[in-house]
Amino acid sequence: MKKYTFHVSGTHCASCKILIEDILGEQDFIKNPKVNLKRETVELETESEKSQEELASILTEKIKNNGYRLAVEKEESLEGDGSVLFKAIPIGLVFLALFFILQKSGILNLGIGGPITPTTGFIIGLIASVSSCLAVVGGLVLSRSAKVSEDNNNAVDKKNFTLFHIGRIVSFALLGGVLGVVGDVIGINFTFTAILGLLASMIMLLLGLNLVGVFEKSKVTLPAGVFNFFRKVQHKTLTPLIIGFATFFLPCGFTQSMQVAALSSGSFLSGMLIMLAFVLGTFPVLAFLSFGSASFAHSNYAPLFFKTAGVVVIGLGLFALLSGLAGLGIIPPLFNI
Amino acid sequence: MKDIKNKKENNKTTRATLIVLTVFLLIGLGFVIFGDSKISNTENIVQNVEVRDGTQYVTVNARGGYLPRISSAQSGIPTKLIMKTTGTFDCSSSLTIPELGYRKMLPQNGETEIDLGVRKPGSLRGLCSMGMYNFEINFI
Image 1 (cartoon, helix red, strand yellow):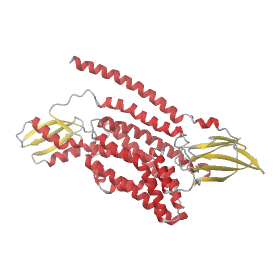
Image 2 (image 1 turned 180 degrees about the vertical axis):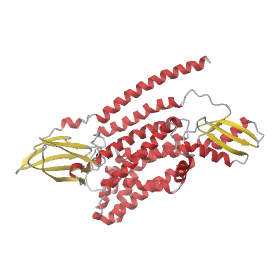
Image 3 (image 1 turned 30 degrees about the horizontal axis):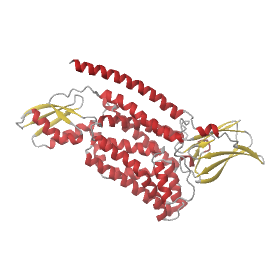
Image 4 (image 1 turned 90 degrees about the vertical axis):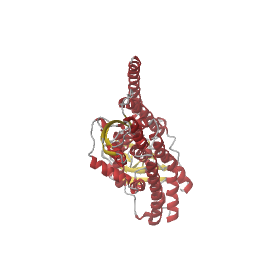
């Protein structure tokens, strides 16, 4: 039995500790892997006769899909964590500025006349997906996707995103149909959507801060038990489905207009077709956000991507939170986009 | 060794540049978000308040925001707000007036009349339910 200490790179979250220990613990020649996040080291015991260098490369093979690497010597990096953030902030701000300029330009304000058919529903969906609704739905998708990609390997996050989109599309079609049947009996509750929107923006802020790395810097880490719980919840097949389903209720003027259109459409089929066409219109942009972040997350630009995504998500989250509070009449409006 | 030192110096200058860039971007973003730069705002100063048969009508257009953003009306006489929509699908069709507890989805096309009663001097604000568009009527 020999005891080795390796340097580990790529650990950006408290749950990384659990993940690495799980994977290394599954190898039968490894005993008691212990990750020290602060010092970025892994201690382990092994019966293997291989040299430490060989072990490092064998074990790196096992965990590199998740973005971690083991080395005998601490990898000298001039690009410290800080300088990535210094790059990520301006890049993120550029994206935010482009987003708000697009909203202010008025390009998206084209009026659409006539009755709502599935075709117009699809076009409205396309517009909605780049409108200010993107601040809530897109921000949520981006933050969740980046976070899921950060914690998982490629196959797991692709499955997660696919389930999210399935949940979203099914909920719009199904609930659209239901609205068509019940007609004007129920109204869509403004306060309910507004509160859900506030909740979504707070989740975005938390995930954004996490992506930027505020929590690891200030060493505000949640206890492993809590993280284990979150990891379990995240790995449940149902979770992305339910979140996708819930996006039906997120505040978005376009979604609400379409819900009203479905309400007055008069039948299950027409209500379903309108909402289905609308949600398919929003799909390209949202799919790009989720699957795009997956491919960035597993590339060499991963650290820069996570921090940039974090900056963008924080910006959108703040915007959504402050406007949501204004919409409820709690604070005076700050923006007039 | 010298190489590393050079690289570190380089890194310092890049970092300074990036900080300056960040500050400029923040200022720019502030202008974009808080600035009232909608061109149509200055062009469309229309007479949107009229008094007919002792009732004052204030008309506000809702599409991609509210126009005019600020209207001026008389206090002390019965007032009605007319919200005009023309193919409006965005948030501005989902109107809320917090002070009156008013929340309604405006129809995609048409005019919606909202009775404001007799207003005291002061301002009344309406927003879209997500809160990113708003308008104000100042009663004098």
